[in-house]
Image (cartoon, rainbow, N blue to C red; front, side, top):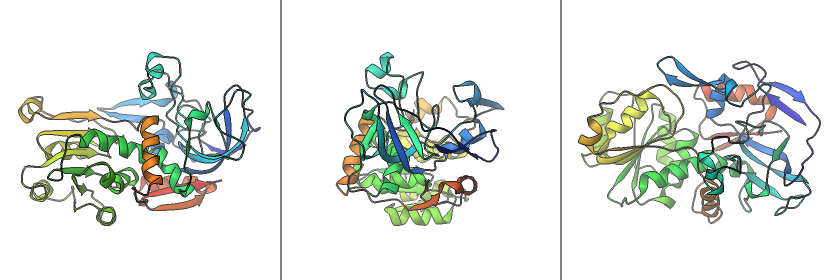
Length: 352
């Protein structure tokens, strides 16, 4: 097995060779044919999440040991099965749902694996797709993508299902007279713009400081785009949304400034959904929550059920594709650098 791994946090990934893993029990072994590069990989590469106020969530003490193989948007071909594996056959091509729980706790037994306190997430806790082989604990985490380009299909395992789950949380009860503000038009935010028409009747307005990303969002179906770093951005947003603000906002960046822009940009009774993991701390007046009657909701990726719902919509042609570029796996370090510097529109998928 060939893998590009974190050997030291923050240092360039290095290529390593290992014996091919042998699946046991219900495990399935895939030959990786593509793996999307996600912004959260930058935090994993650094080895921490910024909690603000000088505090960090250090990953070295939370089940991530080095050397480690990142990559959680995985697509591949089934090449070996454990003796108890069923539901797939050798040669099947599948997208991997990576957000896997322990399987034993009360949350997992209820089907709420995202709430598991001992997750087995591929590319985050267990070896992921920056490799030519990946081990999947059970075939139920393999999702059919028949009729969808595989480089595009793998992105739905994170950016796609994350956007879909956030849109569902933000759009409940909204009508065509309402607006949803999407803050950040990177890979995940752009996915949300692309699929919004299939999820909600509400109008989509985008905020991003990057002109190219604003232009891409308009091309993807947003009715307007504002530069949230420019003077008068809130006034322009309110004018665009009829004067009172958006009914809901989804912050796909998760920085203090973007979350505050989202909160200030929603109307009374509105909802702010925070998705991004940029980090930092947000200072808000507690009085504004009752005075504004606002809700702030956290949304982390999406469930296996939502992944199946999304792929059904994709196969039915209801979700336009986001821009995809493919690169060789050996270009992983350059790709991570491009992502950190904001030079990627859409998604890059690495191919071994």
